[in-house]
Length: 242
Image 1 (cartoon, helix red, strand yellow):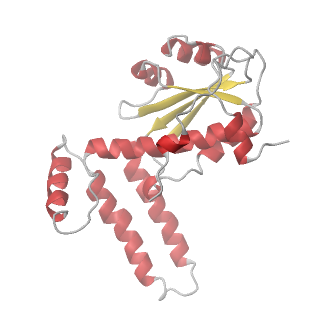
Image 2 (cartoon, helix red, strand yellow; image 1 turned 180 degrees about the vertical axis):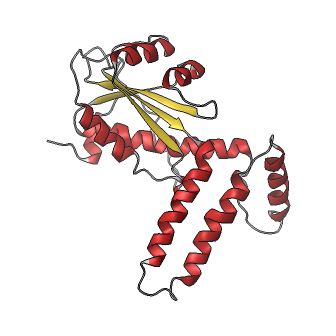
């Protein structure tokens, strides 16, 4: 029986050792689909999920992860990739989708203003934010928005480094969706940040502009795979109500 959201969150742990038991590829794929339903900045979905199931590739990825147990014993691996470099393609996909929605609407006059706003957002604002040239355009944007911000609230995360963070935040949200979905069906995961990103990209044939967000080992937990009881800072220290 599938767990509730609260049960799945409580069940999920970073499992460092997996049993030598196969897991269903289609079940994992469905959990990745749930990951792709995560919220994402401007609906650009600047992410990619590489589902590794071939033994040779699993071994190669494990080596890139320094053969840590969570990689070496994983039955499958999911590599979550931030793809800020795909912003043009994803913006066009949003525009095409919105065009069909507006064209099929039975009251075009009512949606005229909304259509203009949406087309300007993906056709003008997103290119203004994401177009880059050796870091100079980002600096110009930052200075311009900083001046405007002296007089009114303004969006300030406009440099290349800021937009990298935006892409990685969206990718991490998707990764969490995936891991909770895995926990809900009794599968276990371990998100890893210890890896050689250049070698991982070479193994997977990813371009230099792609950025590895995290590598997630997947399987069934071994009783020795959880290294001690869960520890969290007292809730009162991390929660503030204003």
